[in-house]
Length: 635
Image 1: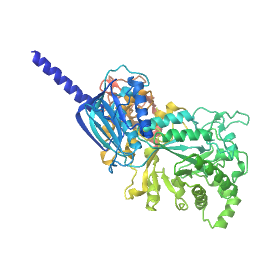
Image 2: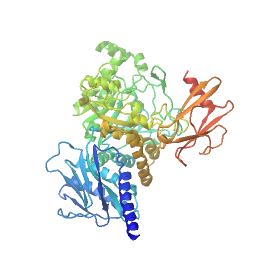
Image 3: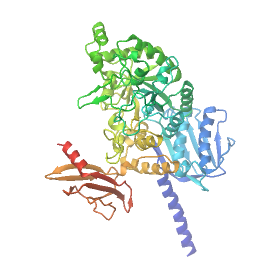
């Protein structure tokens, strides 16, 4: 009997270890190669570190690992002699470079006696550390000591390296200002998922966020506006005497500090100065830069652009004047200082959404067109872009812009960031220009990620599944010209860091996987499994995320005099329960199995999703009047 009991105890221990090993391996982005092994390593208070103490980069990476690990475990993990073989985590640079893994790749080998981490370059070690943290239990994300004696790392052999060199997140710090410390926080969160490029959108109609010492009014005037709260784009126009106290900017020293902070984490910062449109803050500071004489103020979020089904036009001129030589003198000063502050090889000049209706009325622009032989206003913008490219190149930098810079003729050496789908990027690549893919239907993480009834209102939705469908290389395009991709966080409707996190995660998980992992390894259901594990890690780290993937997708149509409602979910295995009587459904209510007719007198539909017996989605209420409007639009 004792032998039988011992057998079951041993069997339980083995199956528990195997089960634990299987469930704990939830790495985002998915590694190129991961082989599971039966052995596992136990991190404890006696674990030591072996690394090259003479290499400053290696030591900085080791400190980042041990400091975070100490916060959660309380373990010191002191440096040991190179000959130490048992209970060690070893970080080393390959003496002979591994051609397969390249500069940012790495290998991890976990055995019962230790963990061996190797890379060709310090960047690879840094990304290996991010993977190593994801192999550890979720409690490793804690900022305070967790009472846990042993921390298990499952046995694995990992070989990993990125698919693309450009893996970016764009952070709009203009529409709402985020402090230097908040930008650092965003960097800390993005590098966990192997992003290596932070695109800072620094200028727009609502503010100028970078100090230009030779043009002090850009921040004295352009960095400040009236404080408004609500739905951006619908605010009442500020009165003349309302205090302009909301805003801020980064000094030269702030930028230098951010650049170094990012570099220590192997992140480049791409600065964007958005011209010739989106320039209200610059024109408010220096009105003579406009083609249209008048008094200008930094936009506080009131409406000044009109969007239609066929395009857009400005109600107030928010552009720099392409026919004014002083504009180019000012931009020369701006890009001189920006180039000195940001060591990255590219500067982004924007070029998007330039309303040309005021140019059309300008005598100066008409004279420019006649003088330069420009056929239309697209060629006028191209003239402007080409002059800006020469300025940027004179500072020793390359220029990149949004895909509108293709219109009227692309500047000779410009790189293109394709946001209006992939078409512009494909066109630029076929012209043998470098391209970064950022299509709004996949990577615009400022857009709603669930139904408009529950998400903060924006003009359209990009669900998690849409982000996971992102493919940076369009069909028929030479991949040599696709540098990579990025997700963009515009912040018109984002007032604080908690909401920035909510909008970024989990869609930035998906984009990270699309730009790091092999395309052939994509697996939606497995990705969702890993996302759910990372939600638990975020709970420990107290980072906010959106649970929108659990909420139903609604498709309403008309069936005679009634509305017919079809519902589905992104995540498999969920049940949908609903009510039409204003009460709150749970799993004892009708379960959705097929499209349902909404009772003629019903005023609201309430819906919730469950996984088994547990509610997992949010309670959503949609008015029948709203559903009727949706059905009418489909006609």
